[in-house]
Image (tube, rainbow, N blue to C red; front, side, top):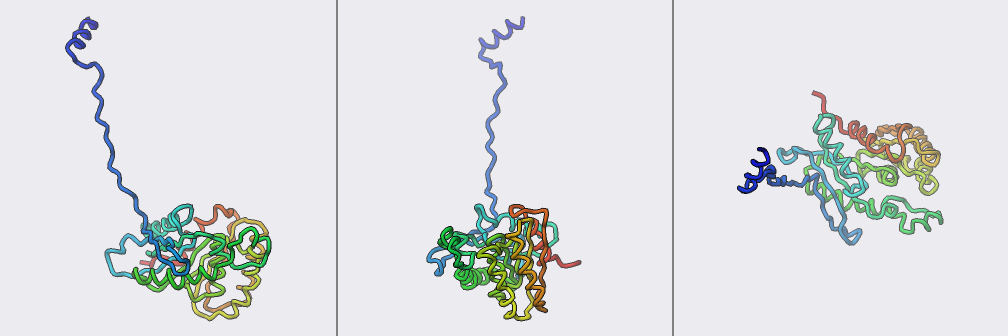
Length: 278
């Protein structure tokens, strides 16, 4: 009987298989995190990538905000997304003040972030190295005026970087401390040029004013090449005891050079920009 019914339905043109549902294509909306600017640079003779994240409530009021300048601040294989994400997290959960994050993308890190060396091995390995002073001028004369002219900034500034960018942070703190209010150097590559920058720290600190500044240093379990110059820098900071300087060194023995940055950056943001108490 079933065979007869099936044959009858086929003969009548009635499909036996279930009707396939029409394929549904979901709407796509890009996720936009910040704005990228191609900043014309007389220093470099072309444009430089500057990425900016502003707090969600920026457009709704007239408040002015502190600015965190982030080295290695590109969006591809650099640190803009995960550091701006920490700033966004602080806004969402109320643990930090709102802050503008400005990512300054690196192009040639050893050219831009390392101070010059006379070491022939380093010169041979990195022939473009040693133009940190040029990059510092780019930050001071081009990036900072652009940000201050375009966004509502409070005048409070911080500079953050890791590894070679951390070396640049320390060098800027020692040689041009007036450029920023706060400095965060995560696993700074103080080994560069045999630790020369750390060895010269005392001479630079003698020239510092008593203006209020913050210096946050941290280092993972990264071996004597990284630890020894950090110890020299810390000793110089202890010896000079600048009244206006709030500095700290936090060892992170459970972290490596590859794992230290995210947690250290979160701690630094919470320390530098704590949410106001109710």
